[in-house]
Length: 235
Image (cartoon, rainbow, N blue to C red; front, top):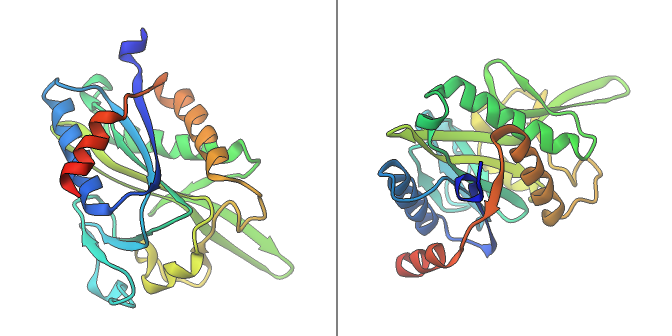
């Protein structure tokens, strides 16, 4: 594979507003489907907000006025985005990858598990509970906490939306929703820093990039100006 065939990789510093980001992502996915642009993974952070996937139940929004709430076409239920959480919008052409949605979601899980392994964290998946989980134990107790969420959508076999990886978000912000509709007390939310690891966002990005290449193949730094201009027009 030459460099032109490698998947583009962009990291945007600062906090990116949700609505223009989604518009830019959808425009890029449409361009990929039309053969006018290459595949892309876009890493960013959002200001504090909640999003509702297509399966979201109104009762799972526990504090409606806390943060802005956005309806979104991705799969899944309610989730939180905010500073300290690495969001990756994954725009991949599944026409090149066997048109296998089940395998694609499994590959996203493998990507996240591989990134966690670089910090000696064991990430696991559970049937019926989307995302990546970490088992935690202490004297007389055990629980499983979600450390990464997955929510994707396909249009013309091109994916968009993607993953949310908890590096150092304010975990109390998750209390305004029932995350992904899971309310049982033995399930919670965690992050790399909550697990006691002094991980920076740069550390997490490096781990995500290395693991992504293991699963999906080479990436290349993509030119950022076209996305910057697109965001400026939409903000």
